[in-house]
Length: 169
Image (tube, rainbow, N blue to C red):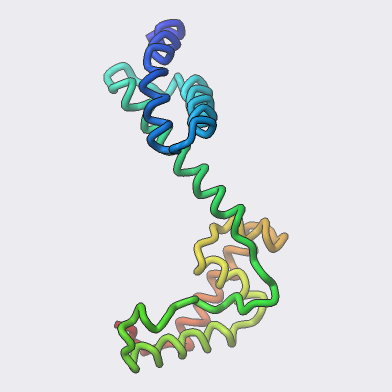
């Protein structure tokens, strides 16, 4: 398919895309932004499209992925790290483990082991456990990516040795 046909197909499904964007965002302005981002991404990814693929489905997958990625960025942007709070706290409530004394004890032991880590290891490891990606941790702590990866690796190794034989069910 040549560039002109590709663009015409994309223009031909704009109404469908707008309806899909409205379903995803539930807001007209956000839907328009998502439609624009999707159109730009599709045009930039034209060489990745193969003729034997459903064009509208391919474009809608791109839109859905953009929506999901934007949502995750927004959530991360609204998440702040308070340096005065215990970063190694896993935020596990006793309700989530059915109140079993053994499990509560095990979680306390794991939390103590994390708390005993060297600060250089504890902070990156705790951020990683709480869902941050390596690059986000590196940016947050102003560290090189490789340093973050190695500190998390060494934190895991240290925890494995401290919790050797420890079984969590």
